[in-house]
Each structure stands twice: as structure tokens, then as C-alpha cells.
Amino acid sequence: MRRMFFFAVLTAFLLSFPHPAPAENASVKNMRLLKVVALGRHGVRPPTQSPETLASWSARSWPDWDTPPGYLTARGAALIRAEWEGLREELAFNGLLPAAECPATGSVFVYADNEERTLATARALLEGLAPGCGMEVFSLPERRDPVFHPVKSGFMPAPQLSAQEKNELVRTLFAVHADVEKSVAELSSLLGPSPAMCMPGQASCTLEERPTNLNLPEPGARAEVSLKGGLAMASTLAEILLLESLEWPEKAQMIPAGTPVLLPQGPGTPVEQKAREIILAPRSDMPGTVPLPLSPRWKAVLPDGKGPVMVNPATALRLLPVHTKVQGAVQRFPAVAKQEGLPLLYLMAEALAGTSPVKAANKAQLVVFSGHDTNMVNIAGLLGLHWDNGPFPKDSTPPGSLLAFSLWETPQGRMVQASFLCQSLAAFLSTDPAVMRDADLHHAQLILPGSLADSPAGPALPLEEFLALVRGMAGSDLSARLAELFAEKAG
Image (cartoon, rainbow, N blue to C red; front, side):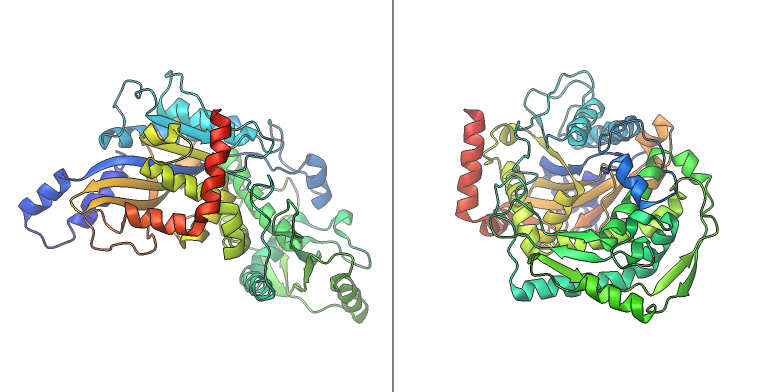
């Protein structure tokens, strides 16, 4: 039987305190789930890179996806539907939604980014949550939704890092590279050499030897702080390998989960070292580009370099920290998270309180924003949230995972809890609809800044304090501009 996580979180913490049994029972009776506001990542998708780009990365073949780059797959939609079929049972158990009939009009509000995979994910979750009920997904018509892509849409200015912040981010990236460099070597060997990897003056052409640059946007540019080059490609490849394993679990599990032989690698010949220095030298014509001299120190020898670029799920999970840590270093960085995550966090907090400029979110008892892993990491960075997600790496965001804020009525007043949820590996690696639906969700309770550890609702924050925290970060200007944005949409 699936775990009733919302109720279980409350009772587990409540019963850990030395109250008499009658007081415990009375407190449980006096607690009620009022509302849930969640941010979800889209489901399983193919790589966003074109087949031509992937072909330039490796001479090996790549699996054939039956959907265009970046689109939600049928398998991804099935996993999302199964996840929300189970969540419907748990929400009904807590009285938030009816057990069988369609939810009341306006009680569920789903706002999706207008990219295909997020829209399709939103439709799939409604098919699982309320099949046949005719619920619609809200989205904005803009090419770039300012809530999910505030910098690229021009709604928020691009992050401008001070010299101190730039140095701090560079140090963080060096530390991440030192932590994952053996996995990067394995990813590089998995791809093998490719002529398209070669930079001018390079004798070898592998992923780990490709230079890495930190790109910092100029003032006024609609551009993000980003990584380009070898470390960024390694991060992307690690995620692609996971997506392949989840799309074709039976095929992936037939691949041996071998461990590579890692050999120390020297600095190269004097000519190679000089060529690398030239490549990594700062360029006056690229003032926003910071070269990162990440020299490869390991070479991985894989037992098999044939067949398509695909690995066993266990190998994919072992390599996934490359993606999680590289992404976290950039997207959790305070100056980045503030510009990229504040509009969405503000809307989530106001929706929880019933004071959102998105009016339909105020009436709803369940509000879901269908977005991206970067959105989740930005908000986690703003609030200092971390989660254990075994067997996935710490702080990872598997397809369909959720960052949820729950509002509880308690004897101490209205309290906000934060949670991270995702499907179990058993569900992800199964093609049986019953297993996908009934497998327990992984649930991690998160600690909001200033949470009351002795609250009857567990670690929770009074609603007023949660609002003050988020509104303080957002400021009155962002609040006014979001109100204006959605007033225009309503008009």
C-alpha cells in the first residue's frame, strides 16, 4: 500500500514528542491540510541536442528516440500519469480532493511553461489526477514564459557578478571538477575520440580534453550564466544516460554494469601544454568568457567501446552526480538563483497564501507549476534546501520530481512545510502500469529557514514568516511587476 506521506509526516513528528495519548489524538484531529503548491519537473524526454550535434560528440551510435528533441515521450507521459494516480489517493486521504468523483471546479490549477515537454507533462498529470474531468492547463503565449525563464525572456536582468562573486563561482567549479573528474574521465572514454571535439592546436579530441568556459552575460543581455565546453558536455551526457535508462529500462538493464580502470594521466608534451595555454588564455574580444584551466588527470579504460552510447541504470546513477553537482554549482549560486528563481518562488508563496496575482491559483486547493529541473534547483538555492534522494544522488531532480509546499491548519496556526518527492527506482525501471502506479514515492522532508522543529506539523514555518521571507527577497518592485504582468493577461 502506498505511503500516505502528507499525513505520515505530521503524525510521525507529533508522536515523537512526550505528550499524553489524549493530547496526541486531539492535536491530530485539530490538524488539517489546507493547500498544496508544487513545482514539478517534466517527464522523460530525449536529449535537447539535435542528432547531428550528438553525432559530433562520438563516433558511436546513439539510441533512436521516437519523439523530437526535448519532447515528452510516451513512456515519460505514462510515468507521470502513474505518479499522479497515486498522489490522487494520498491527497484524497488527507481530504484535499474527493476520493472518486471529479474535483470541484477551480479546486485544481496547473500552470505549465509553454514548451512542449512541460505542457505535455501537465496534461499527463491531469490525466492521472482527474481522468475524464476536462481540466485545462494554463500557460502564457509568449515565446519565453517570464516566470519559468525570467532572464531569457527579459523579465529579469541577467545576473551581474561582482569580482568577488566571480572568483567564488570559479572556485566552486574547480572544487566540483576535482570531485567528479574520475567520472568525467569515464564519460569521456564512453564517447571515445571524435574529430569534432578537437580545438585548434589540440592533438587529441576527447570530451575531457575539451576546454571549459564560464560565460558571464553582459549588462542588458538576455543571457544566462552558463558553462560551455568539456565540463558542461559531461554534465549533459550524464543526464542523457539517465534519461535513456528510464526510457528503455529493460534494454538498459541488459548492459553489463562494468567499472572502468582508471589510470593517472600526465600533463602532456611541452607542445600540447603550450597549445592548451594558448587556448585557455583570456581574450579581449570575449570579455564575458572566463576560461577554466581544468586539466584532465585521469584516463578511463572501458571494457567495451562498441554499440550505442547507453549504460546500465546502475552506471547511469553512479555518473549522475556529474550533472547534479555541475548544475547545482551554477544554478544554486546566490546571484544566479535570485534572478532565475525569484518570480516563480514568489508566485508559489503567494498562491499558498491565496494572495497570488494569478487569481485562479488563489481559489485552488492544489496548485502545480509544470517546469524544469533548473527551476527547482534555483528555488532550492534561494531557500537553502537540500534532500537525500537515494539511490539517486543527493539533490538530484529525476523526471517528474516535485518540490512541494504544504499549508496546514494546526493548533499553533497556519504552518508551511516543504517536501521533495519523486518516484522510486522500482517505478522508473518498470514497464508494468500497476508497479509504476503503486510503488511508494520517495519523500524527503525539507527544512525551511527558521523552521520550528517542535511544531506539531514537524519542521514547519508559520505562514506569515514564510511570506515575509519570500517577499523580503522579492522586494516591492518584483511584486508590482508580477501583478502588472498577470493583470495584463487577465485583461
